[in-house]
Length: 395
Image 1 (cartoon, helix red, strand yellow):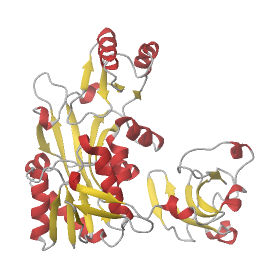
Image 2 (image 1 turned 30 degrees about the vertical axis):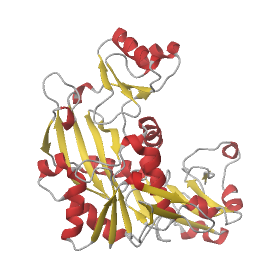
Image 3 (image 1 turned 90 degrees about the vertical axis):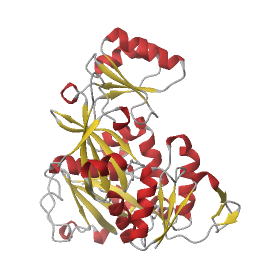
């Protein structure tokens, strides 16, 4: 495998460790400055130049895109994707995670635990918004802040108003978030690689500081996560479209609550804390997946006239409730079941003998007219964005 690490900081701890891990496993690896690429576009031949020369062939890329170069960095990653090169994190996943509001909007829809959050622009909406999240104290966040920068705790309503007014006067977009008192000064960082958490640490703030980031003086300790916290971390990363991610969670009385999902998580703090070879786990995962670059389903479906992806919801007492997938005769209607969702379980490629239950959701590919026929009359007038741009259905 020939691996390209996209990074503007070749001497940073994380980049050095990832390169070392690849070399230790006898892979070819180079660190390429993300800003030194030129993106060339022509019919049928997307291409890249690096430092004014045609880019040689790479099997995989590992993006380490800093927040200050998100737009250009994701454009380079997207070009690698269009060239059929496996990317450890996709451009879409990086974009989803980099915007705090966007990531919380996506996670909220999928029933992932998050602190109650609101986003407002008009000054008249500020007080009602603070009340809706539970009143002061509240956490105020810049949408694109990193490493705890732009995260403020307002102890009183008046303080919150003043902070928000000041930030908005500087044309800053901010989030107002419920303060989870029971987790004050502590959070969990879970390092997700693929479909598992390879390491986790608890970060504890020092003194009067409520932000627990290691960059702000927080102390880290290794921690063994429960199944609930591991599953939440993995689901959050996957929902946002990330294979390698640092998932930050609060330990609330209601269970794990996602604060942020980082697409370029640092390795230094968590490797030194846990004594684990996390860089090695990342490289080994890439090597195992390198032959399976992403396929953009939405692009492929545009050439399948009359076909699409949809979600079928199993209602209690419906014709599908209690029947096996084979008994539903979906295949006879030119509908294939790709995945079955049951509570928090995800069952890919379910067998025909599997029985369906009320509240199951089936992700299907098939003839849109056939799936439309499964909609109850009133539901045909509604569109629920469970699968972006594709029509949901019920049975």
